[in-house]
Image (tube, rainbow, N blue to C red; front, side, top):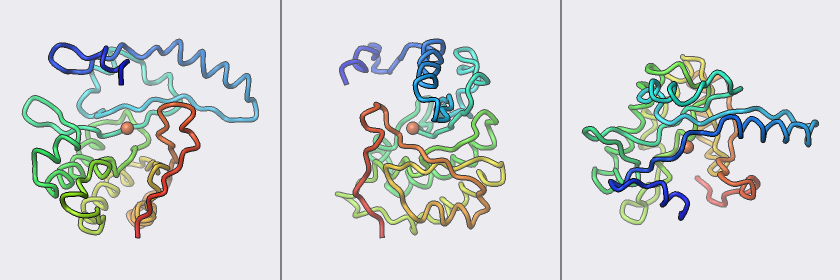
Length: 202
Ligand SMILES: [Fe+2]
């Protein structure tokens, strides 16, 4: 996207400006005034909180938000970190999924900052089905269940991303002791709030 292009530094790293917390809070306050019948919580999505806790604390006071969602978008490769879509081009397909799922318990153990864990199927978004066939969660069931167990035992909440409402996620979550689910649209712009996916898993 053009506005993201302008945030790229010469090395190709995205360097976004700090979150405008005052502007965000002002916007939420206006929404609450305009829609008093709605309960509107403030929140942030904090990626890789077990790795970037110290850096984030220098940028923003997370305690001002009603909710902190934690997410895992990248895995470490040497001194760098890569998204699954890149990793699927670098590593064997199954290895990416297992590495992703095995990192989740480490994220839980390594950070108290987040209450909700977002999109546990994040790596599936980049699954190279053209090359290896459709994604079948049963091949990674133990990995998903292990991640869910770690989250449940730590009292965290699992987000159901409404872009992909897989039925096996709430089923396995419940069976592994999960107590609560949060729904998130993952809409990055307001007009996508009501968008739904037609993809189905059988
Ligand atoms: Fe995310």
